Length: 345
Image 1: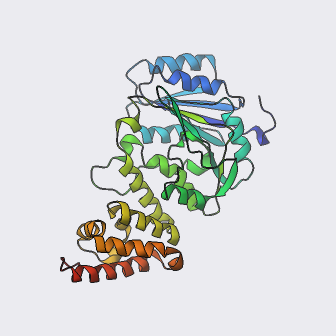
Image 2: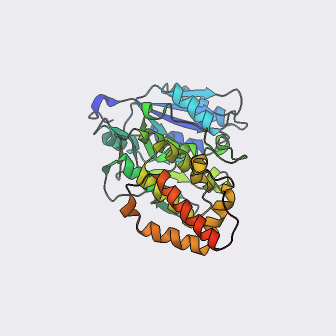
Image 3: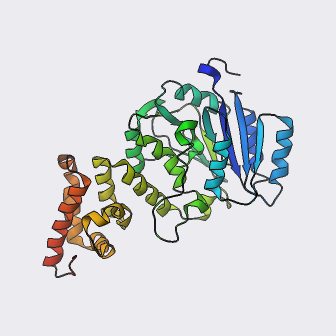
């Protein structure tokens, strides 16, 4: 047991679970084996229909630190996370999904890192993605443990530099996420964030960073393990668009000129821009903005213009996203008129 950590802060390890009677054993055992033992384990059962509840009740009977929540009905993953977090008592929260597990020093090393500075909102570690025949290390963003500014983390997420989306490889301060678990994200009809948890999990990382004084820690000396199997949400479903909506939702709140403009060009060059343009639709006075976006992403001359401006983006970083979009819109109107394409009113 480690006694040198400041205040020996209580860590609330949270395992949300639904029908994992075989897999949850490994998750629970990895908590019991932690070198740092000042923890509580909250297992929130989302109305499992197999023997999951019997398995976790057996563990709870042998350790008073294990607490069980049983939902009256299946409330979906996001609501289940929120129920468990609100029931926690620790200063720190560690999410551990029911098919994952931790190295024995995970809590010890993460606590050492997060207690270096009160402005650190959370720390994250690498995660080994475990396949049947191999392991692949993800989220190894830095060679050594370090502390970075929140803005660097945001830029890493937006620029897709391999930063995490799953909270399963992070230790959070409880006060940073207790009010930041949400599935209320603007999106097209039919996109259900509460069903899968994709998008809301990323926002657990991003929303605390709306406070621009916040820092983020990286812990190189430990790691989590994510098991790949047929029942995994990420394997069974294509959730890419969910994360793109979550990023656009966050940027509409964050309103940083450089990062928002970078997001604009990524969408303009690579995919349908409507996620980014939704917050600006009224201000840009685009009536048929879907048609406009389609033209942006398919017309060669428009794409060439966007690429030329993108290469010079560092020279116009002073320009607000609103004014920048207006300038781009005017240029695109001129190109469209010269091509005799339908005009944007």
